[in-house]
Image (cartoon, rainbow, N blue to C red; front, side):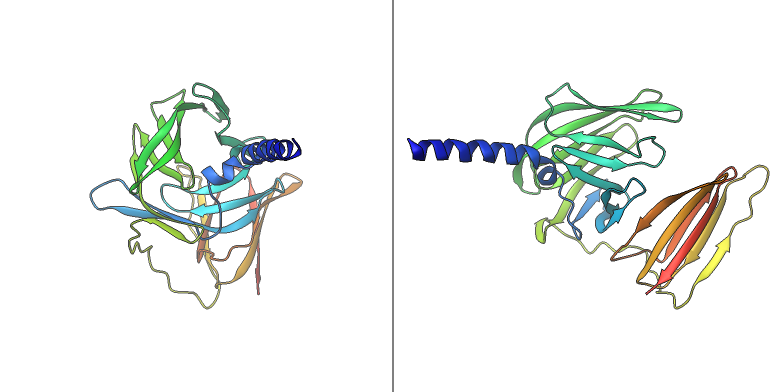
Length: 265
């Protein structure tokens, strides 16, 4: 009887633990993980987790750089959160793996439109030569036809997107050091590592008031950007990356002022 009780407790605790940590298995966010996607016509693009970042809401996110999959993501319990500075709460739930088909994941109110994300379907699918459990999420843009379906696979993350304006699918991935599918030699545009700082800015005009300040920095630096609005100052981005881009662009609108503090080490 005692052995049966211990087995039951172990089974229950295993279920609870798996529910509490399910998002990190569906959407793995270890530094170094990468995905290669194609939209056909022998065009391949890579997305890679380059660092962990502490954002202005004091939460840690994995920074993903790439064309199709990019942004700042974190997992907590059954949810995947996406950091978005335009939102009041600075983040939104983008995926939730505890919900049933038809349930609403989130309603995201952007300036000018609203996105509603729902669980559209779940099941098994074959990708990268193997069968996997998946959930399909539908993002509805209420003001346009820019809707889309996101296929998220257990253990691999986002593997496909099907939308009105775009389609791409995963052809290979490296997750926690293990390779899935075929990894090609996808090269990003080559940059020469600068030896010193440089700064440039375009010239806005009344017909185009946007201005872009571009600067290059040597490798292995820590950067902090502070956004100043009126008399109030707040941190913008504060992150430490293993691999930093050599050129960073900030777009200033209206009367915002950005102060960039660059610390070389």
